[in-house]
Image (cartoon, rainbow over all chains, first blue to last red; front, side, top):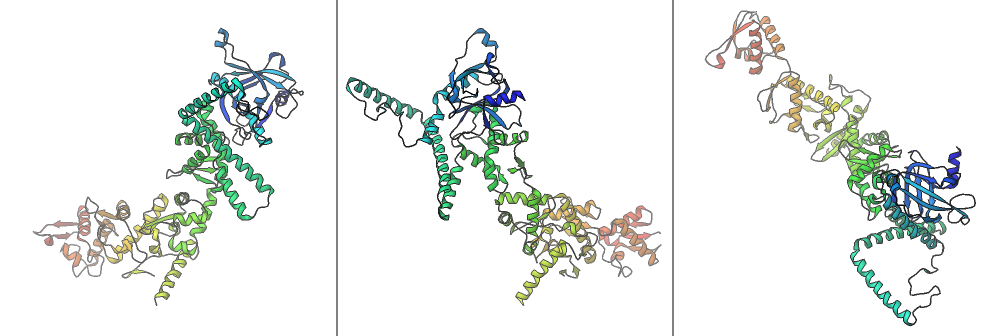
Length: 456
Length: 179
């Protein structure tokens, strides 16, 4: 108990989604993951927090997040990159060859002995934290990414663009001073101009050769833009009492933007060995809203399109998707993969009940019109408000349960309520005066009666 | 009620799925059972002994609901009769089928009763006489398919109840009863 409180006191808490993935801050992007990582304090500072053992260490553009190894964890520990004052370069020694790789960095703490964070009182002291990588992850690559992210100071741009947008870019190119005056005077000015030109040609050359990289970074910007617009729309609808039509178009716009926006897609590059596991969790988080809209069940092909559209450029293969879905069995997520007898695969809510769907189908085929003429998959799709392909799967499942029968004729493939169990084979003429068989006979005889009266 | 000649059809004859071979096992078993009953009943009342699967057979289609059985379905239902011992294929290609609404041993029993009733225990008859003679008029033996009759007679011969002797043509085939 004491151990957990000291942990919690030192670290910042990171929230997790229901499928166990960290909830990212606005414009925060995951960079890399390592498995089996311990976090230890300096030897003489162990009163600050007790060591965290063999969790997953996630590097994002904003934070280091340590996920506890148990699958049922609801919260993780985070160190904002802003709180890191130094990253030590690795010691190269004979000894280190036999050790698990270590990454050491200095963390600022505030007066309470908690990790310094933006907005809290400025760091008063610091502590050296060591990450011991016991897993097989690429620790050198991680260290590289770590310092890259730390030096990138992504968290600052996010904050500044949110808080003082429009105040002008003070960190702009070297042509302008902080006061906005042109700094191009004398020989220094000429030299500067030369260098400027050289730099710009070099830059455009690089851009030309790095078409793909440029495209991908642009795509990322687009996703960020979409997310920003969505946020703006959201705040807009809250404040202004717009008329219905405007609201409708705004909602549409929001939907559309939402379908673009996974800002931080899990990739093979960032997640490494944990790729499918993390992908699986991200997919579980992502699919909830589309699943709700589709009535609790979505075709896997549709999921593939939706998910990849949301990921932008970091597309995944169908195999990856399938593997991510099949990993759900191991996690406590509210969705599941289901394979119909026909081979069609869908994603559905675990709470989704076939019985409820069957009840609605039975109600549908028991209507007099359906008793006479049966129903097609598109009839069922209209009533159940789902896609015809999905409706057909439901009908086939209901058929396999003995609730329906099929009728294949030149008019097409139709389903009828199953009357066979009601008919007595030892007396084929026997009709009980109750049950669905007699209801059906009444339905068809009124039909014939109508025909007779029409023709006479 | 819908009729086929003087044959009264059951209500489910107008149920379209009755004419589509059902893929679900339990449903299909029930469907097959109903078809077997209907085929036997129809053949018995209409004195039909042979069904040709590729020929027109009134029971296999329902113009009222514009449905008819596929060849696969016909073969499935008739095969079910064959495995019950209520029908026999007449060719390897499964195109023609003998329908036994009475099994062969039942037909043999009928013949014995007929012989006893007419006091023919020790007499001689031709096969044709049994099928179309004055004595058999009004009995089930009248108009009996020749193949079925020969099977029944052979069964009785095997049991020592009669002897079949051949003439020069099929018409001359004779039977000596010894019951």
